[in-house]
Image 1 (cartoon, helix red, strand yellow):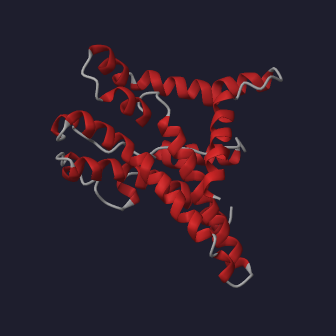
Image 2: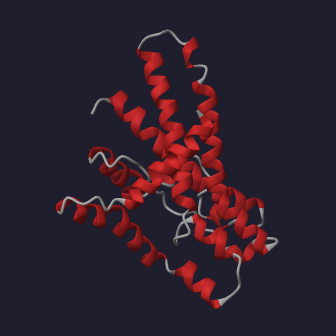
Length: 219
C-alpha cells in the first residue's frame, strides 16, 4: 500500500476514533470529572488513545477483507461518572459527546468537500476529495455504530446509564458480553453464512444502509 493510500484510507478513521474518545474526556472534564486529565488523556496525541486492535488492526482487517464498512475504537477514556455534576444529564452528555463530535466532523468535511473544485484539477484535488469523503463516511459510520444500545457502546449509556437501578447497572457493566455479541454479529455469522452461501451479514447491512441514509443528509 502506498503512502498516499495509507493517508487517504486510514488517517480519517484514526482521527474519527481518537477525537471521539477525546470528546468523552473533555465533556466529563467540563462537567466536573478530571479523571481523563489525571491520566493524560485530554490530548490530541493519537498515541495516547490508540488501541492496537480497535484502532489499527480492526480497520485494516475490514479494509483488506472488503467488508463494505469500516469501524473501530480507541482506548476508552477513563470517566468517573460519580464526579459529574447533575449526574443523570451528565451521563447522557458525556456518552453522547463522541457521537456528536463524529457528526460534527462529518459536517465539516462535507462542507470542505464542496470547495475541492477550487484546487488544481490533478492528483491533489483527487486525493483531497477522497480524504474528505472518507472523513464524512467514516465519522458517520462511527457515530451510528456507537449509537447502538449494546454495551460498551455509547448508545447503551445514553439509554440506560443514567438509571440508578440494578438491572441498568448490570446491563451497562456487561461489556465483555456486548463485545462478544458484536464479534458474533459482525464477523462470525457472516463467515458462517459465506461458507454455506447464505448472507448473514445483518450487522454490516444495517451499518451500510444506515450510513447511506444519514450520508444523504450531508452530501
